[in-house]
View 1 (cartoon, rainbow, N blue to C red):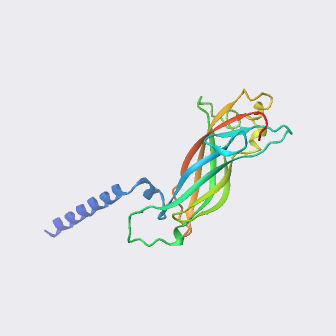
View 2 (cartoon, rainbow, N blue to C red):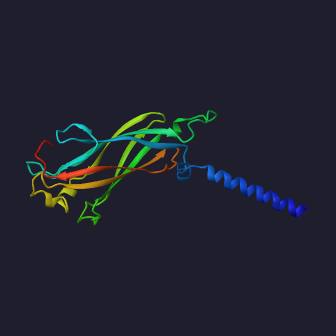
View 3 (tube, rainbow, N blue to C red):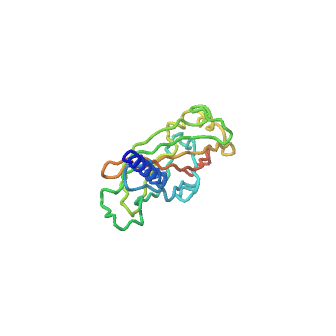
Length: 201
């Protein structure tokens, strides 16, 4: 009888553990903190120089022969993982610090060799605090000036703006809360149009 009771308790415990695990979301399983980072929007610069484009334009060289970084503007928010759990007391320890952004390029035609078909992927260290329940803007590089002096962008310099290379940028935001808990990376993307555009930027 005692042996059967032990087996029953173990079986019930196993069922409860499985139930709890299945109830967790992917975000809850991939983070150590109680906050999550949300990308509200990513905006590029138009050929006229205004920041209100849903794609990024990269002028591979200026009329003065300079290679300039191209930037994007991201609007980020920090929210609790359990927004409807009223018993939880949220603190400033749950504010989020964005500390790294990775950029990786691909092409729709499947030609994805870095330094030949697409620019090299790269990481950039940043530091932006996003208050829990609030929003912050962060400006970051999408195409570096170094990439414009390397293949495949350097080949566009001798062509006019009718020769365009379209890239797909995968952007990954890494963050932690103020208690030093790493949060789930947030992945988003934007199309990047590269050419020797007529110089407005």
